[in-house]
Amino acid sequence: MTTMWSEDWKWENAAAGAVAGFATVAALHPLDVVRTRFQVSDGRPSILPQYKNTGHAIYTIARSEGLRGLYAGFSPAVLGSTVSWGLYFFFYSRAKQRYHKGDNDKLSPGHHLASAAEAGALVCLITNPIWLVKTRLQLQTPKHHSRPYAGFSDALRTILKEEGLSALYRGIGPGLLLVTHGAIQFTAYEELRSTFIYIKSREVRTKNTGGEELLNSFDYATLGAASKLAAILLTYPYQVIRTRLQQRPSSKGTPKYLDSWHVVKETAKFEGVRGFYKGITSNLLKNLPAASITFVVYENVLKIFRVAKGQS
Image (cartoon, rainbow, N blue to C red; front, side, top):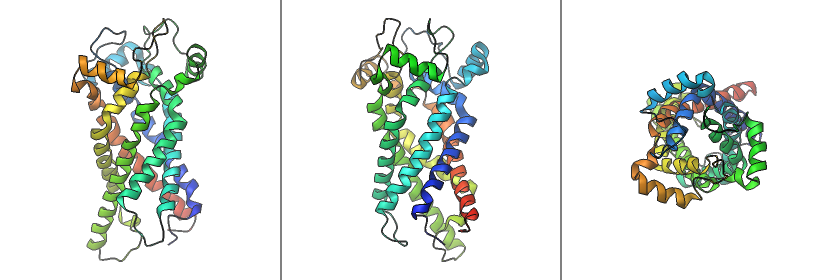
């Protein structure tokens, strides 16, 4: 079987990642809207409604804003997720290729961690403006602003006009720190995947050199959810900090938070440790199945490419 590290495989990794990212967003976007609104709910007076829990939030948004509210920011979410996952898998596979020295060499956890961190940093720098617009559209309610954004392109134009180019990179600091999220997730996924393959290969007493065909979609779903859980628990506060930084300034043009340290101080002062985990329930409800979907789609799309190229 042709090695998965060959140069020919890079576009397949990108395409599989892009398809996986689109499938994930399309299925679970309403929970992302809820998570974002919880993350900026700091207990102080706000134009945003106050939600009791995830179920109440979904019900309230659906009743007051309709389906449009539940899918606020959907266009940049689809674009951002598709581009991010496509680029992530592309950069990740290329980084692993550099560390890989031979067909039979197994990459160490350190190599997986470095590859994932490198891929995450590159993707963050490229996609931060998309995620900023997505966040602002998700926080926009009918009563939120006298001049609401009409959509993705209008938001970009308005931000550039009112706040300048630098505004598109608000939250880039915690965004880069969130590189550790992907690094933890992918390292955990690769190590768990290798363990699953080893256990299954012993069960069937095979000397299979790749092992990919030993795993099924349920295995990939389990691996994706488990690796995502580890990453979320360890890095979630960075997400809260980034979301709070990316809020739209007031009508006077004054941002609610000046920088990441300001967010940390204010959150710790008024909310304590719990403030850094606002919205984690809806985040878990969204991202655990999302990670499962992503890796199931990604691995199966790669299998389709292998079959199509006669490399199965």
